[in-house]
Amino acid sequence: MQLETKSGRDIRQALVFILGASFAVFLALSLWRLGMARRDSEERAAASADLERRQARLEQRLVKIEKNSEEDKAALEESIRQLVEKKETAPSAITAKGSPFPVEKTMKAVVELVCIDNNDKETYYTGSGTVVDSVGVIVTNQHILRSDDGSLIKFCGVGFTADIHNPPKIEFVAASRAVHKITDLAILQIIERLDGRPAPKEFPSISMDQTSESSLALSLGDAIYIGGYPGIGADTFTFTEGVVSGRVGTDLIKTSALIDSGTSGGAAFDADGNYIGVPTAAVSGDIGGSLGYLIGADIVDKFLIDYFANVNLLSEDGQE
Image 1 (tube, helix red, strand yellow):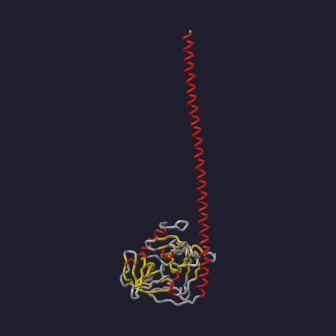
Image 2 (tube, rainbow, N blue to C red; image 1 turned 180 degrees about the vertical axis):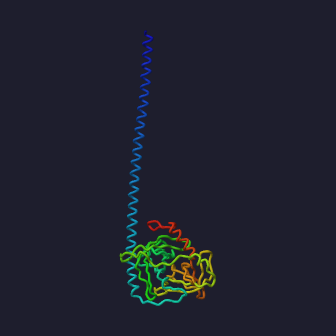
């Protein structure tokens, strides 16, 4: 009888021990799970706070970019207005004329560009560009869009003319949209009028049909005509004539046609009036002669295809 009582007591003690151990394990697991849940909650809260901070910084950055862009445009517009006033009081000149194709329509699509230095608003660079799409897409040279410190100029003034006697009036603002340093090409997009009035829905433009074929088909001695706004041309539209003098690699065409500072970024045409390239540089010889260089229209066409496919675009803050 005593043995049974002792055995029963031992069993009860064993059960109590087992139950106590199980409870301890359960309690430990519960506390561990509670700790894990609390840590997960803290990590989610920290991640949420970090996301909110990142979003706030991004919004601040976007506001800063927009503010800087507006300040750049405002400074540009004021500088351009001052230049326009000077131009309107300057004497005009009649430029070269004569070609086997009508020049009047072509010259309307060749524009003058006035680009203000990023760091010195009193310093500006002039050049030429060609409207290649009626929505206001302009092809020019990327070196025209370089400030003295090498940074990319974000905005340029744009002037059109249909009168060879008078300089173009700078009436529009264009923003840099794409650059390609290797080929020295750039694309601008007209975004607004200087006076705040609505911009036209369409701008005079050249046709890009058959441009690649026309450029590649050029032979030695073929006639070339160049339109633009050289610094020596009294700020009026200037039309010069020459021939194909040779080629440099697959990108450049040599020509005897006069290319001077300011003509860069303009337009070159063959005898049928087909667009064949962008005047980009001139080199003078030791005895006074010079050769001009054109970027072939086939290269321009490839650049435009990339642009419309969203390749070679600039970021929102104008960086490359």
